[in-house]
Amino acid sequence: MSVSKSEQAALDAVPSIPRNDDGPVFVEPWQAQAFAMTIALYDAGRFTWPEWAEALSDQLRQAGAEQQGEDYYRHWLSALEQLSSAKGLTNGPELAARKDAWDRAAHATPHGEPIVLGAELASD
Amino acid sequence: MAHDHHHDHDHDHSELPEMDLRVRALESLLVEKGYVDPAALDIIIDTYENKVGPQNGARVVAKAWSDPEFKKWLLDDGSAAIVSLGYSGRQGEHMDVVENTDDVHNMVVCTLCSCYPWSVLGLPPVWYKSAPYRSRAVIDPRGVLAEFGVSIAEDKEVRVWDSTAEMRYLVLPQRPDGTEGWSEEQLAALVTRDSMIGTGLALSPDQVPA
Picture 1: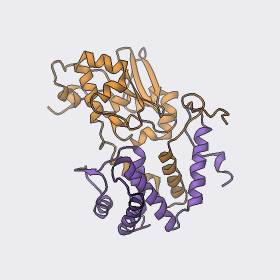
Picture 2: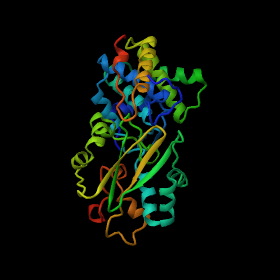
Picture 3: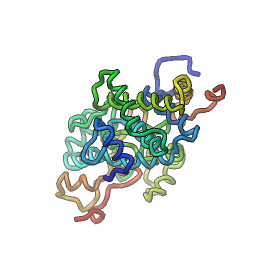
Picture 4: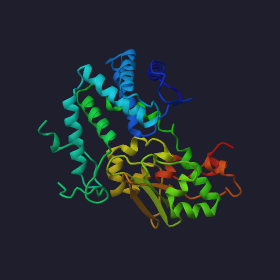
């Protein structure tokens, strides 16, 4: 499996990323999604790897975190939310409102239909 | 809105896990504002589809093909049989294994989101999560299968299994002809990811390098 330049840069900047010989490993799909968003934002020039490494280590330090598996990416996502807010891409209240909207959308969706954001967002 | 807050996922409404909600919230905002291109995300994730790897699932299938006792257990209690091989889901979801036969072809979808037996198949492919697959797999399974290059005889029943957060499905494909006496390891090489989702068939011996 080849690792792209950006991914290699991420691996170099953040040595704690769980990985095997092929590159990063993920335990659940959302973790890959969070990882991919980070790479995509970096590719778009939204932050540097040192900035990212600092944001992530802040989270890990705060949590006194176990750095493996599910917990690791839990902190990863917190760091991404944090850094995205610090860079003005989003903010806490907006994220909370959107998360709530997804939750309501899921609850309002009968099983068998795709969950989409709809009326929940009209008031945003 | 449902008035009953008992979490009955299968019937009246759906629920997404906390981390899934947070990821969706951030992603949908970043995409909407144009900071992230969803196609670029798909490309990055695509790289990992085969990484966690469907090889765990392939070993399960190869063992079932080789060991009738194990196969019986697998079909009776998929979760336990799969855990016995060391592959367990983190969320303790149930695993139901459905067997393809001469009369029945099974395929798996999650119409809701992307529930997927990733303890045995790795990350779901991008198409599995796509709205067209999720909606069309139920309405027109034969049409979808045809697009995957799988044609199912008219008189063969096609069953579509809709996954939930609690119940995941794995298809046990039919063992290809011409594989008598093969070892489990040889057999596992014939088992593709798609054959365990039901959008493909197991490879025939002439489709793998000797």
